[in-house]
Image (cartoon, rainbow, N blue to C red; front, side, top):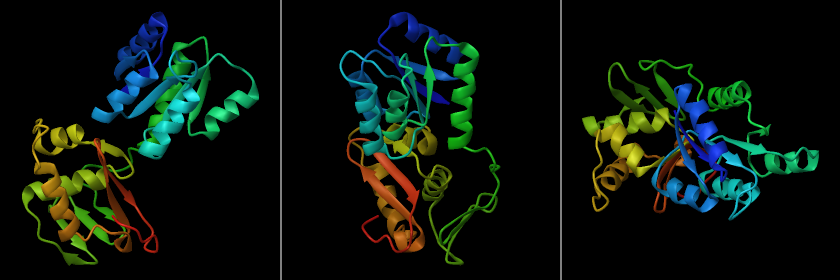
Length: 236
């Protein structure tokens, strides 16, 4: 799991990175909100740890921006030295999923991080489990896709891309993450390969709200594939 931590105090940043790293997580540290936002445009993280007091912005504004841009994912844990109930409620109301009071305690930080990750990415499905979402059924063993009970013909690469999308519903997926997961390498910024494959899947699988899903392109970042109500309308 990849975690991004934004903390302007170098000692605190090192401590967070050390605690998470020793627990087996990959943690990247950023000293400012602006640095984190730049990273989020190029990378995907499974969880954010956000200090509430930053030199260039507030954790409140940062969390608000992430939620407006990325939706409900990734989960966000905010760290604060403020104990007033109003401050904590404000942080949770704007979109943070949990909070932790400073000073940082190793066991508590790990407990809260693991709890958020379990809630956000439940490990209930095995790699070979059949996936049913909306009007779709994907069988990883047979490597088949059915829409409304009818089989859909896709290429091997299109199948891998579709399987990756259905296994990561609700997450904001950067182009780099898609490239590494489906192609096993970085394709390059000038390539239209991903866009072409996504366009083909939209058509072949009819990825529209009336079938229970929505595929959205996020400018300069990547894609979000999520469940949708048939009556939502709009464009997918």
